Length: 139
Image (cartoon, rainbow, N blue to C red):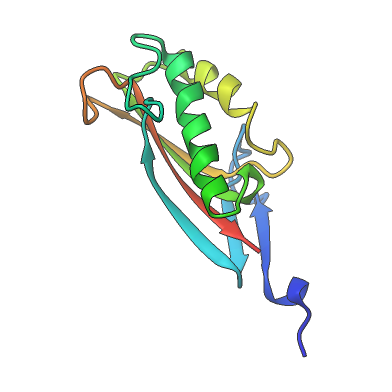
C-alpha cells in the first residue's frame, strides 16, 4: 500500500538553469490529489458591488479575498495555490509592486505560486482594474 504523502505532493521549483524569479516559482509540479481551477476573480463583493473604484490596491485586495472565499468553499487555502494569472488594465511597471504588496498578505512566501502578469486593454466591465485567476492543488 502507498502512503498518502508518496501519492500526493506539490513541488515549487526554480531551476538554476533558468533566470532567478522574484516573487514567484518558475514551475510547480503536482501529483495525486485534487486540481482546482478558479475562474478569474473580479473586485466585487457578495452583493455584486464594485469595491475600490479607481483604486488598484483596494481592488486587488477584494480579488484576493474572493479567491480566498472560493478556495474555502472547497476546503482549500492559499497554501494550495500553485498558479496565479493576473490581468491588469493599462498595465504600468509601477503597478507591479502594488499588486505584490497585497498578494504577499495571502500567499506563502516560501512556496510562491507560478505566476503570469498580463497587461490588457480592458476587462469585462469598465471599472475593473484587475482580474486574477488561480489554480490550486489539494493534497
